[in-house]
Image (tube, rainbow, N blue to C red; front, side, top):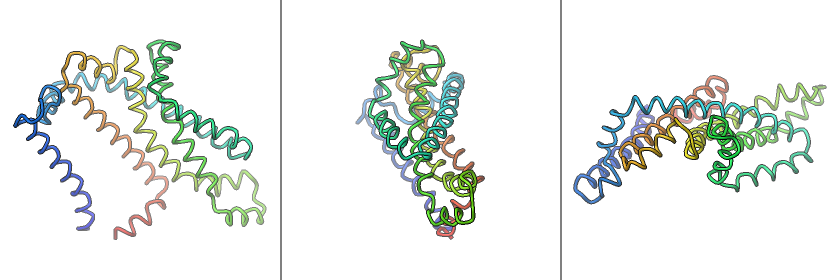
Length: 257
């Protein structure tokens, strides 16, 4: 129990130390407070702007959640499709990898030009950002099922449907959640990138406005809120994983004991 408490306190101590150092550097004039506001100034801006920030957050969060749901549906379909045939996988998988070599920041202006400045281009950006890690995690999970378990089930007369439900589906859940944790943190980033290209609301639009006004304390406040929301989304997936795949945490809890 003491070890577990220390493990949780250690990163908190590191963060607090960095914040104190940051505040001291700005307070004693070693860093320009105009370009890099102090943590205290950022906290004040966060409190003052919290109402406005939450209004913009609703838009960004909605874009991110819609994009992650669409990305998950497409990822499941593509991963299962590739699992059905090695030829399909050898043809499609390299295209998925190649798609990640094109920076999304380059494609976002094109989406704005093609689809306008409404909700659609933001969802497209989020979907593209989140699609790859989920697809890869599901694909690897489907292919890493214990071959001995497969052979045993085949000798017992299991059909392809039974093999998928009884063997592949439980095995793919853990890697699926791993990919989803990565993707869900990317979703907010993707929504903000889409908003940078144009829009009337959202945290990305807010950040552009305060940047153009040289209100960098407010911009840092928006960044802090984005980080908090991303952590909460990550933790929500972690809670869902613990509820649906308790066996994935058994070894970890045993080691901590």
